[in-house]
Length: 279
Image 1: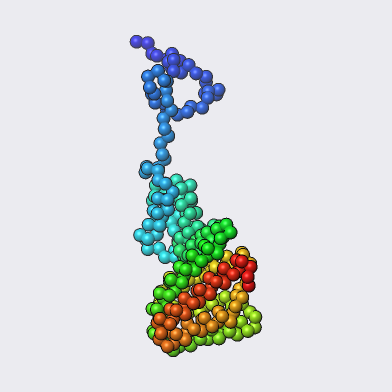
Image 2: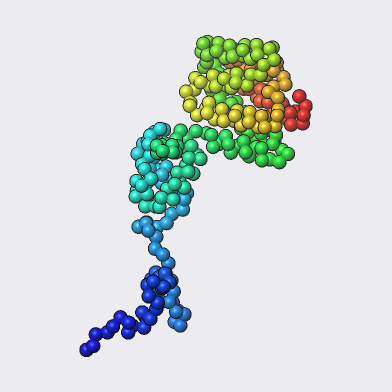
């Protein structure tokens, strides 16, 4: 039986390796008479491909499962690739998306760490949403103010009748500084913010000042972009804050809630006036 030479095989009747086109990989048979068909490339990972949102959730779950706190280092990219069974690009895309949410912090040259999970993304989103309302940003801003109003009316009921003399004295001191600044013609937005943070400090709820601060920041950003004045009626603003403290010192829950509602009505009216160019 004669030995069959490789050159006798008709499948090898092709140019030599020097001039031969690049092999496209293995072929699999197609329908009868249709000729060979390219096979679908196999995924490198042993796991099924997953969408980026699922990978992000898995990274967050990893943080929770390992009880990693803000500032703690995350596993390296290589470790995440092996743990999650995904490519380097998939890991990087997930980490960038989580960085935008302040869930992770990427320190170039040092690594990736657990973020603060602050409300910065919420502030950015609400600011954009408000400014994106073509010609009607006051309407979008009014929606935000209404949410804050409902929140603070409920919170002020919780603290009414429970604040100590020392806490009430601190609130009165802030109002006095507001009055002093108003008389000197100085804006006092930071004092306004300090007043509301002090007002609910006794609740011991860390989310309250963060959430109120988020709404406050959105309002200030929109006002800055639109060129609104800080407060065309500082005397009225001071009086409304003083009314809140007076009701709280008297232990008047309903009065404190009404004073808070009047305060927000004033903010809404001022924003509407500014949008129409009325100072």
